[in-house]
Length: 255
DNA sequence: ATGACTCCCAGTGGGAGA
Image 1 (spheres, rainbow, N blue to C red):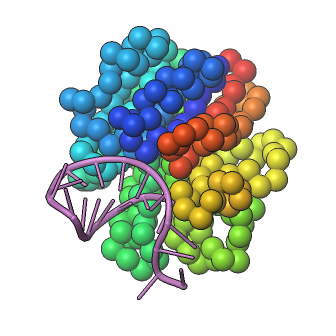
Image 2: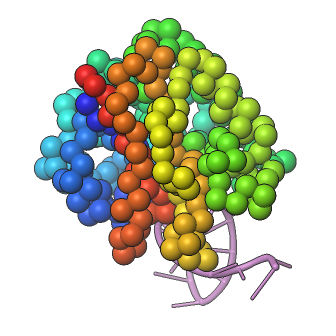
């Protein structure tokens, strides 16, 4: 079984690339972030033609998430229950015996800003909800665009990024607090090529120079950890014309 | 170097992203 996450930065623009990628990577489920589409405009027909059923949760211009599965997902939840939020950032469903959570963490703009405070509150709410989700569903995967580079080795230039948004001690502590619920970063279960990133700035020829960050993650619950066989980042789509600034992350489970 | 690119909604500019 294979799962994936991809911040597509506008599904309207990236739909052809998504369909092409799914042809070459026929994953069982994929979560998308930054679809930037209201649900009325979600391309259900094209996605069904590709063999997937979609659960979407979007808004105009910003944010927006979706869960695509080979068969229908059940027990679908939108956003974080109990956390009042005008932004569409989380979609959860049951599929293949797993609880699958797709999340688009807030960016946070800059340490000390209102958006940074929102980011921290949002993660705290996610964590408290996850605690109960994990209790109810021990076999759980949380994946998406976390907008956090967990360690210096996830940053191309740790000195330049020190204390900057995505790399602050506070954000990293929140990332570790998620792991302490009983989750593990699937990417770090394996030897990985050095300087493997999931996001490269559109500017400054950052991709060509491989100046990126690893901010897109797949966390699996402790119960699933023994079944994880691989976790990779596919940078190929970043080479496309008009690419998303993020690359997809994949996990393979032996089940 | 307070930049750089790309998206969106807008409407020949500006906010947001990371």
